[in-house]
Length: 267
Image (cartoon, rainbow, N blue to C red; front, side):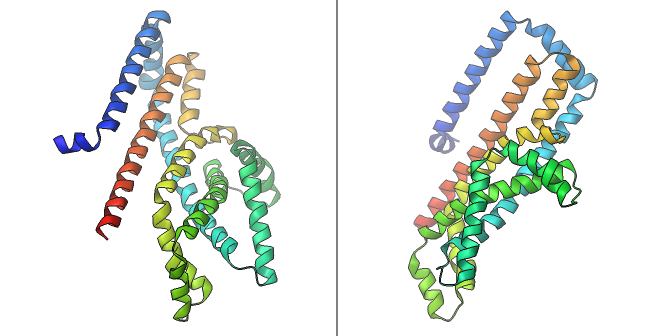
């Protein structure tokens, strides 16, 4: 137990400070805004009227969109990164690199809510593809994440010793196979913590999926406020829930970073 607190005393300190701030905030709200009455209204709609079920649905959809979006983003980002680092000797390679550049520029240069609205209300109907709101969000968030992960992956590929690629080519492996089987796996190991941060960003960005009718954590609490005509408690609880989720994931990312650093020292 002592060794645990010795290693994670900063995390424990942050949690204590955060808890103290939340307590002070709660006391202030209780005294100024009639917290007891507002909490009774929240409890009535959230528990007595089964509002928690909608929150559970929202949490499930948030997890689906974030996890599936990250998975799609990793696949797309890896392919784009590989295309960008291929020597542009052939014309098809140069064209592919230009397409990837335009793709990345579009998704990095426009807000996610704009991409969501354009994709759901314009592009998907134009191509005749009928998807549920959650499935549409997964696809659009995956495309968005792919643009960011492509730059992360490209940096990871450049961090791998060039001798690894040269050795693979020397034994007769084609460039594409050398990249996907030798360089990319090492690059993924280098960027795992950064991918964790991208996952956190995706979770927070899911707050806009209500624009296309999907129910996430934010939408569940917005509906709670609309039904009860009381927004203070739902929004405060929503903020605390996001903080807890993000803090938990951030803590796991730190543990993963330490484990990777330890394995590298042992290696």
